[in-house]
Length: 232
Image (cartoon, rainbow, N blue to C red; front, side, top):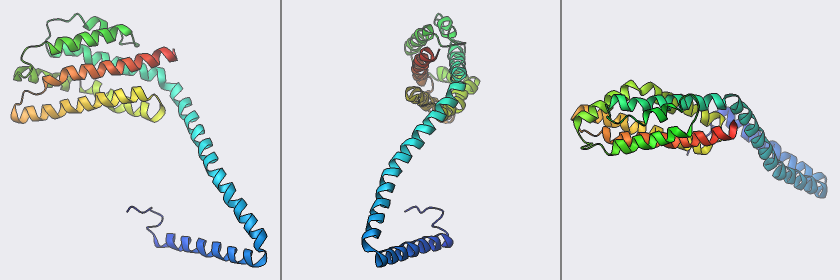
């Protein structure tokens, strides 16, 4: 069982023992002098503590939420824009990195780069469909291209899944956005793991995750767009 750092020190136990001795002594003296009054005071003290602790927790919790929300309001729009920019840049590069023939969804995706735009979701959905329609997704050449794509766009993905996700978790209570960002990070890590395996054994298992990456990005963008509308 884990013990607190305070009780791990010998002096900590001395403090606990001293507090218990003082408490027992006060009880003994109090009941010896006036049993009834001591009982009334003891009951009142316990009652005040029982009522004060939940009230104190409620007040402190409400205050902390207020402070966090106030801090988030200073950076929320900038954060939304940053996520949109990195996401659209990374997804637009999928067409280049994987040498896709149908590049029509690129324009809708980039239309939401500077600020969230519903057209970007349509573009991401179309891109995911294109990737799933690619024949022979286990082809090693496709996985090689996917690995190169990941390395070239790793900075954008890490900015979203590391720096910006940390900011949203710390300052925001927008759980849907947090959940979708975590899901995107999970797919990103799967791609990284599959690249390591592909380079060691030549598994051809990298490209198959690209549609999942686009799907996760679309989910992030949907949550982003919902909060963008409610904050602008």
